Length: 220
Image 1: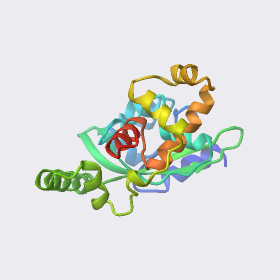
Image 2: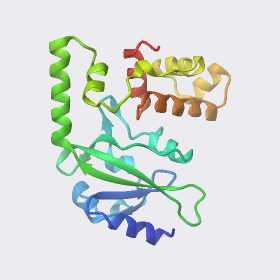
Image 3: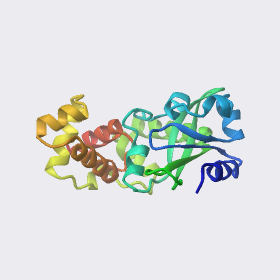
């Protein structure tokens, strides 16, 4: 696929969509994305997607140097769709994000096409129901979230290795990847690989979400 074909792919949906390269820089941007974010393609192209999207989930910021979408794509591992709160020209709104991987000629790493669909009302209702049930039953938020999202496996069922648990504990202490690699005498690449396995096992999209899910499940 050529870059112009990538742009055609992004233009082919009426939903807001954009494509980023392996460094998270925007390479394609459609009209619906302009309407959502208030940034024309000319000003969006070349910028890091996190600068425009400023994505967050229930646990905190998702758009960061440790972006799970970038890390998963580098490993050629597909991602399920996920909910993300983003900064639009109308303020913070919830969207469901699907990520498609596209191989582009001349690039050693694939590009990522993000298709974003509004789910703000559904998400807010979901969070209201969760908080209501938590208050009324005393159940932990993790259990209630699983009850609402029946397709999401509970964190308690995840089987983490001792190394993965050790890395999660260090992450919970605020250690960056470089310090963890020094502490455990393993390479940074190995740390990142373990983190990706943990995210997959806990069905988490960010390191912070993985830590919180593991803590609530008593895994660390």
